[in-house]
Image (cartoon, rainbow, N blue to C red):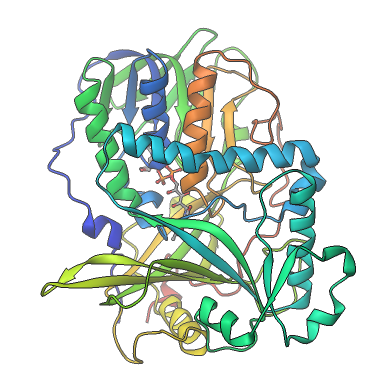
Length: 488
Ligand SMILES: Cc1cc2nc3c(=O)[nH]c(=O)nc-3n(C[C@H](O)[C@H](O)[C@H](O)COP(=O)(O)OP(=O)(O)OC[C@H]3O[C@@H](n4cnc5c(N)ncnc54)[C@H](O)[C@@H]3O)c2cc1C
């Protein structure tokens, strides 16, 4: 049986707005392309932190891309180990990059307070569950490096009876705390004794689609003179000059001083650089797509909100924490009421498929049966609080994520023509980095001179090797919705 792509976030979101398109030529200070969380956050900070006018162009409707089809949990870690970031950028830049992303917690709070958002955000301690000694040592090394860099750390929790305990090098004392096996199993909500350690981290969850919709409504109400929202407006071409850009959709254009690409990397926009080397080809080599598959069921509320990632049980193939094995993650949060009784939504993600040509991805592709089966077997084997066997998933959904070659987001001006800026490349965890990116773009738009950062787009002309970091994808598990072979 085939399943439709149905996301709980879009299911919960309501919008009475009809959505207007581009029906005449317009002028603005800043054109933002893409109305997911990156574009919405960029518009928000540009409006609140500068005096510039903004036109936000979205080819469909606000937050109906990855933002409406994601896992919905908030985190500020990278899908790469801190060790590997330090190897690539050095300790100072890597630590600053980590702090930058963590600044999104405060930015999110300030947005919620300023715009008086009603969409709930739950913040809690979540966990990464560890099942191999190799993974344990890497996380301990990460913590040691983070401590050296002056970043906040919470000690790892290790089961006192785990054989690995006696082999932990003395140098990592203070980086971990022993707990009983049953304490650990309770925290991780597992029935699988393979997991013997846990990394606690600040995490949260929200409905990012509803959050974006509310923010957009706030901007429309608060900045009617400076903010224009254009939906159903696919941008086809950008012509970059020395002083400005012409953005074209259909028969009309937006003439702007700067343009910010917040398209997650998949936009079908032709970029013409009238004052320098070709950017079009470079850009289209810069991001590749991965389709992520999620499943969710609703149950009477019995437990508080949480997010737990279950790191792979097999040895890693690459030199990074997030090896090529996929890992599953479970998020639980309140989800309305049924007959006056509070309900929770439990969402599970993990299966992914690499897409060489992201044009093959369509949001209305059926959800592959294989992905649901993978999620179900994971739940049965691992998760102690799984819903009874044979019960259905109310939601099955997929979405496209943009990965940059090194797994690090791009935030800043294009070196070949700074009229163009980027806030894109979600690399798996993109909600909080998009918010940080939005604030930083507003600073660039104010012509602030900002120190070098690991998020700076660099002048890597063709060919760009990709990916340099192992992605958490198993390519031969082609649960690719585009492939008819995977339809049951
Ligand atoms: C299954 C899945 C699970 C995920 N889980 C998590 C998670 O739990 N936590 C987390 O932090 N991140 C998660 N992510 C990543 C997160 O969803 C993304 O980082 C984030 O939503 C990306 O936001 P965005 O604004 O960059 O992209 P999008 O939300 O995709 O927005 C880009 C927008 O650009 C528009 N666009 C594209 N081309 C054009 C054009 N030519 N003209 C006009 N508009 C255009 C698109 O229509 C789209 O609306 C997940 C992603 C997926 C798919």
